[in-house]
Image (cartoon, rainbow, N blue to C red; front, top):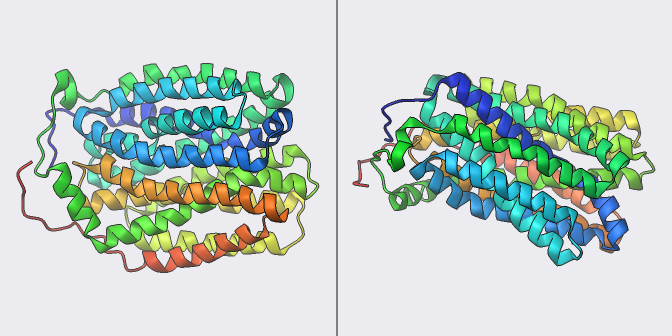
Amino acid sequence: MQTHNKSLPMWQVLICGALIVSMAMGVRHGFGLWMQPMTQDMGWGREDFALAIAVQNITWGLVGIFSGMLADRFGAFRIILVGGLLYVAGLWGMAHATSPLGLMLTTGVLIGSAQAGTTFAVVFGVIGRNIPPEKRSWAMGVVSAAGSFGQFALVPTSSYLIGHIGWQQALVLLAVMLLSILPLAMGLREPGFAGGQTPKRDQSIWHALREAFGYRSFQLLMAGYFVCGFQVVFIGVHMPSYLKDQGLEPQVAGTALALIGLFNIFGTYMAGSLGQVWPKQKILSGIYLARAVFILGFISIPISPLSVYVFAALMGLLWLSTVPVTSALVAQIFGVAHLSMLSGFVFLSHQLGSFLGVWLGGWVYDRTGSYDLVWYLTIALSLFATLINLPIQDRAIERTPVPA
């Protein structure tokens, strides 16, 4: 177990963590709005842009493991500072990229690394160490809801900026805004890590990894999270272009993404709250089953602004609702000493799904002129995730203490 002499006030953790995640995730969810203006101005294909976003997601997952390890050992403060600076540099570089390779290095590698240090795994580690178990799932739901509010607020803002000052200046303005992450990181400076201290643990990193990867429920949780990543990133990045292909105005897509963010405020909060009283693995199965039903309904009826808005609202209730439940389940089974690291590995699986979802969407479209095959694949994956989450065991693992 990890021990501290002091804990941060709960209100401070929630406010600072929520604002950081809100900005980092709000910008991230709007990247699909840049696909058409960038590719048209630069003469690139959709696959070029989709590949850069795919690299962003896989970089986020890979770097997230190491940022989680460092946050567990040295505290989240330094990790968030570095992540904030990388985010600013990545957005500025994206605005000035002149080739698909430059786009991949800035939008993909820099911003992906930045997201690893400014989003859920690192912030949830602070929550796990400073908020008691009886409120932990709820607190994670609050911070996840803040990420959704960022999407609700920043996606239409990004759309407005692109339309009025151009896509390049819009990126530069967002980069300036994200500088505010740096002072907010001060609010997550944990007393237990002051002066370079490292809290005591009863497990080494290696033993924690062997325990987790040898545990069947952890493997199933990772497999289900792969599906979540595939679905949300495919829809978030490709839906604006999909709707334009259907003859709808660009503002319909911006409104739809904003509705996803708005309704996910309620969805993630409810999921986190329900995780305090209901079996978390059953909540996850229900989320994936509902996604399958809603996606099938969306692609089976004629596309109109109304059908898009209804779909966005329904999907919004489920969008990030897996996040607090999954992270709280990891903490419930394995404890909080290595929570950021283990959450980083689970999230890597999510990002592998994200990589495949966003890249496959561009690849299939460029070769068939349609997204239909990928829509059907999202439904099949939802049914798969529904089934594999059911046998997960949510009780705390029993272990013999191992010297760190």
